[in-house]
Length: 342
Image (cartoon, rainbow, N blue to C red; front, side, top):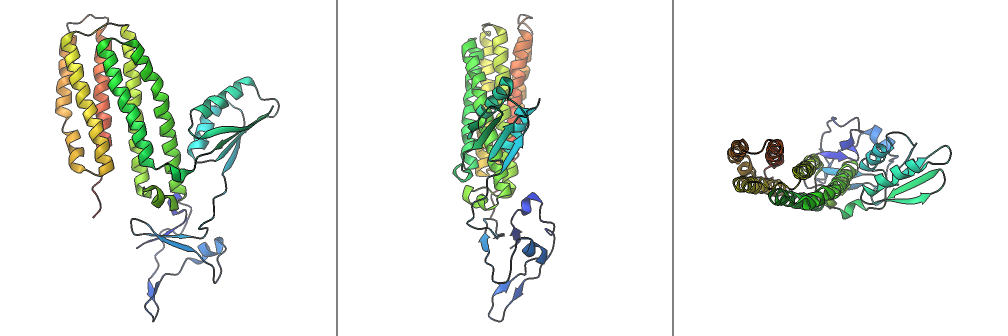
C-alpha cells in the first residue's frame, strides 16, 4: 500500500517521491514514520490524532483535518474586458465566493456580464449586490453530485439533440433545428459543473471515495465530458446548416443515406459511453470497427450529391461531414474505456 498525503495530487507536497521503510513492533504492528517537515507544517506533535483511510485502490489517505469542513474559497475580481471568462474560470477552479468590485459605481454593462455568466453556471447565485459590488456564491454541495450522474445527464441531452437535428434535416424543419441550438446551453452548463466537481475531488481526495471516482479516473471523466460537449456542438453546427437550407427537402435517396448514417453514428456514441462507464473493452472495439461502414455511407452521400442543385451541395456535404465527425468523437470516447481491475 502507498501513503497518500493530503493534497498530494495537486503537487503541493514536495516529498512525494520519498521512500519510507515499513517497520514492525514486537507485538506485530506495522508502522511508517511521517516526514518531519510535513508533520511540522501541519502542526503535528506527539499524541496528535490523524485520520487514516484506505481508498478503493489500496492507498492510505492521511488527513490532519478529518471532520473539519473546508473554509469557503473566496476571490475578488475587477471589471475588465474578460470578466465573463474570469468568472467562469474561477467557478471551474472551485471558488465558492466570487466578488466583483468596481472603484466607483458599477456600470450596467458590467452587471449584465456578471448576470449572464451566473446564468451559465449551475449553483452559482448572486447573494449580494450594491452600487459598486456584486457577490456570487456557489450553493452546491459537491458530495451530492456524483460525476457519473452529471455525465449521463449531459449525454442524454446531447443524444436528444443528435436525434432531433437529423429529423429536422430530413423534414426541413427549421423550428426543430432552432430548439436544438437552444438546448446546447444546458449541455455546456452541465459540462462546467462536472469540471468543477472533478477539480474539487482532486483538491479534496477524501471526496473520491464518496463520489465513486478515483483521482486517476478524474482525467478520463474530464475528457469524456469534453467529447459529449463536442457532440452537442456538432449538433448545433448541423442545425445551422438546416436553417441555411431554408426548408429545402432532401431527395428520397439522400434521406435514406442520412438516416442510416445517423443511426450508425448514434449507435457509436451510445455504445462508447456504455463502454467507458462499464469498462467494456469489447464494446469499445466494436465502435472503432464501425469506421469502414461510416466511410462508405459518407462516400455514398458525396456520390448522390453530385446530381443535386449547386446551391444545396455545400450544405449537404457539410451535414454528412458533421455526422462523420460525431462518429470520430465516439471513437475517442471509446478509447478511454479501461479494463476492469482484478
